[in-house]
Image (cartoon, rainbow, N blue to C red; front, top):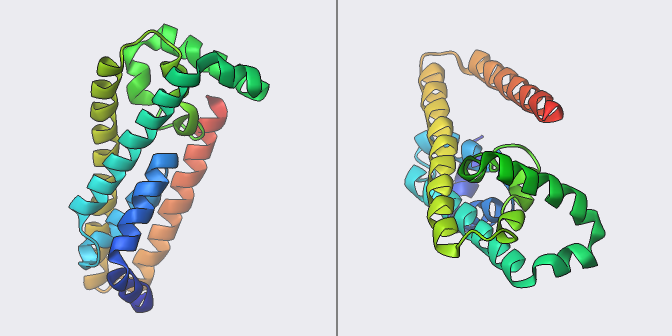
Length: 187
C-alpha cells in the first residue's frame, strides 16, 4: 500500500486526468475508490469531485452534440444502436426529466444515455442545465460516499483493526459489486 500511495502522490495530476477521462466515458467505481484514498492525504477530494463532475458533464455534452448534429444518420450507419436508442427514447418519453438524473447510474446506460436525448426536441439550454445538475449530484454521491468509506476505514485501521478492516472492505466491495450486477440484470 505505501508504494501505491507514493505513486499516487508523484502522479497526482495524471490521476485527476484519468478520473476526468474515465468519467467522460462511463460511470463506475473509480471516483468512489479514489475518494476512499483521500483521507490518506494522497488525493484531494475536491479535485476528485471536480474531475468526476467535469468528465461526466462534458462527456454527456459531447454525446448530446454528436446526436444533435448527426442524429438519425448514426442509427442508419450503425444499426446495432437502433434497438438500445429506441428503448432509451421510450424511457425518455415515459420518465422525462427524471431520465436525465437516472441514466448515469445503471451499468451501460451512462455511455449512451445522452445520445437519444440529442435526438429529441429538448433545447440544448435545458439539457445543459439538467446535465450539470445531474453530473453534480452523481459526482457528489460517488466522491462523498468514497470519502466517507475512506474515513471509516482509516479510523478502523488506526484502532488496530488493520487485517479485519481490509477483509471487511473487500467483503463490502464484493457484495456491492454483486448487488449492483444483480440489480442491473433485473433492469
